Image (cartoon, rainbow, N blue to C red):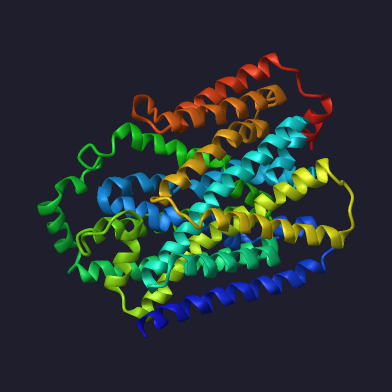
Length: 483
């Protein structure tokens, strides 16, 4: 009976998401510009929807399960590290937003690769970034599918595969059918659900522990290191500082958030989204990681990704568990749907239409877009059937890989006239190679995360290539710097 009470709110929530997808599909199908509608929502997002879809896309299984799971064992040090993510919305929209929106409309760009291809006029850049996007998105989506299924298994008692089928199939269907508009609308709803779920769980944990004073007293007795900024040296300061790169300013290189800058309606929407997004992401990161850190002394004996589900089961009654679980599920689903639609866009828009059949009928384009999205989702689903242990590291690996490939070509392409194809190619190749090398070899220069030396190497390669490579054409300069 308890399992059923948990399951019913989850099923209702998933059905609601599917209903939104069918509704947006009927609206999209009747629009003349299918690609723009399906992949970036017709550039019509208002401030609230823009903020929530940006944050919901950025927040993931790592934010709601993996990261708080690490905070469970490391304490306040991991909360400090997680709060580096607070300015992500402000940075993304403030640095890229207006300029990216103007240029994307000017060149009719629907994907980040569209922008890169036009900016550098180079096929290798377009193809390599499309492939990089698909590969790293696939890795990140596998982590999200695993997170959703593990969460389902932990709180309902049903098997991991059952959870994977229910969760995976739902996300694949509503993303495939609804496209970007369904993604944006469901992301906005999921953002609200995430906030409410965080409030519910944080209050429940503090109440179950007898208040902050009692929980803190336990921490002082049992593990005083958990109250220190470095967790007694377990989280070194250079590593914390390097996260200012990985989940701080380098998020400007994440195509799943960057593409949101193409889809908002006007400047007013942009400015309000910067404020709303900053407040919401700050609350989510603080609230959920605090749940993990405090939960270790309210519900002891849990490990890694099982911490948040375990805490939830202990501190909430079954019906509230079902409602709360919609929060982490929302974080996971909103990340998967965004990556799924962008991976599909890379295949259809950046590869198939650009280098395959360039001109096909609208009804065929609709069909292959739906099929492409569904196939990618199915492949990710298959890879998630046998999961690795801790999802936070898979997610961070995917983040780093995307930043290594996209950060400098995207940012310098917007703001540096001399940035050219040679620099971008060298940056992409050396960036991805360096990131793989440092990650696989486990090298942490001066105790930092591999993304720090990776971005430095990629920057040097970009600058050298831009100075010694062929200059941009006059046409490119006019297109990007003259109104």
